Image (cartoon, rainbow, N blue to C red):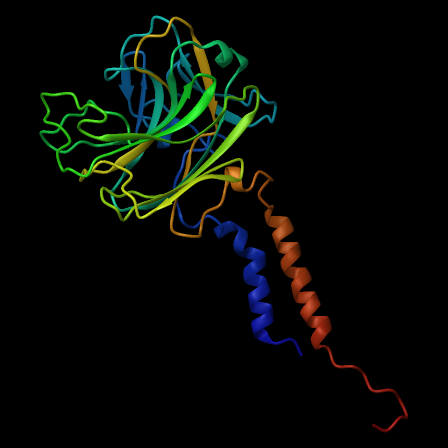
Length: 310
């Protein structure tokens, strides 16, 4: 006889694929939706909510087909030479909601850079995690984390400060004076292909934080018991696209899968850690049924032979 616990365990396994991402707190992937879930879109002097413009900002933030040919939808962010400032920068970016300091998060996304990036002369950020300054504190400072294209490399930059007020609101904060700025890791610029990044972090304005980064499934950086953001109450938020701190002379586009954000310690694996497709409901169901059949064969009694006493 098959024990009920085996049947139950295998049925749970067979049906569990629907709940594999039960800990997701934000799904901004463009093959799953549009801009409507994004808190803010900023480009060419415009700053609007994603809910108000679910199709994005024309020619600046758009949902398009994957340039690598997968037929999936991705985000194309475009900076056009001559664009005007948006919030003191030249940007085409989509921002998520705010996360509180102390939150533990997984961020997972992919980027694709066309060959034109090999000749871009101006430094650009293609992903940022920004903090929210406290009252009476200057907001003119580096993002707490940024992926920057510079000198044919991608660099992961981190900025942080232990003080409650990094600099007063009437003075721009300076790296090395008011806050610390460091390069965590870097990798070579590769164009014409998707690169996938995973970030696991506990945001902390003191030495209780940790930060881990993977590129295409390979761990690039790991640090525990270290501050990794500014000591602000309102928290941080993820944004990706293109950001230049000075006007560029060349128009350029960057593509993104859109970000997936998870909450929890070991409940989230995606993008770079699992570049193969997610298993389908059908395959998971079949695996569960195979498991039930296996236990059934193991537990079935052997029939007695006729006319033989045992």
